[in-house]
Length: 202
Image 1: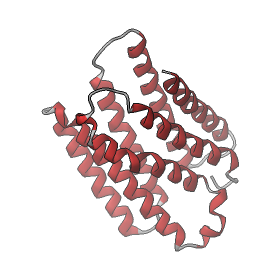
Image 2: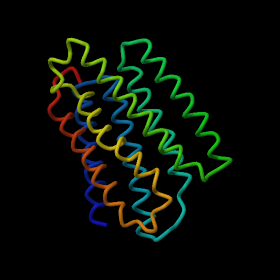
Image 3: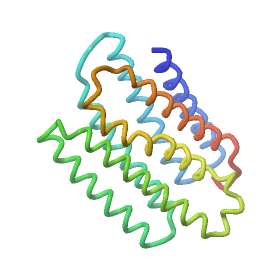
Image 4: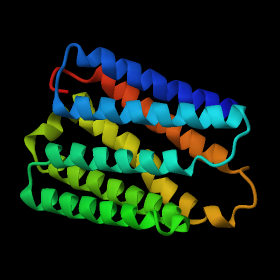
């Protein structure tokens, strides 16, 4: 339970810092990141409420959250990328995700595969962005770029979460979920660092 408190606290902190930064730097990437942090915070607070009242279920809000989460991330990188081929890849994967999302309503057991697919997509978006960054002049200032630190946070969470979610059906209890909490906390620490240390071009 303490892990849950800490990672939810970090998510809320990241959201409030993003809102504060929006007052000074109004960029599309920051707007989308703030929206992502907002829906994530709402989702986790609803989940915490379910834990406190010992209420089971809640698949619908997890499904709705997955839709907004992975589509917002896709739009973030679509607008961030300058390479047309990379944009087409992101758009194609985004459409595939939406189609996959529609099938989950008819077969709820495939929800976990939707999450794995979304995590794979996000990891690919990050690699495409980092490749483009590496080949550009902006790489010289990468330490002061918010998209870079957000990407590091995403890759720190989504890439290791793929094998975790792939094996989740074989877990007999929730004893290993602390690993997921640590990954979430690590992702939010990178995002917070980026929000605090990024320069004006955020």
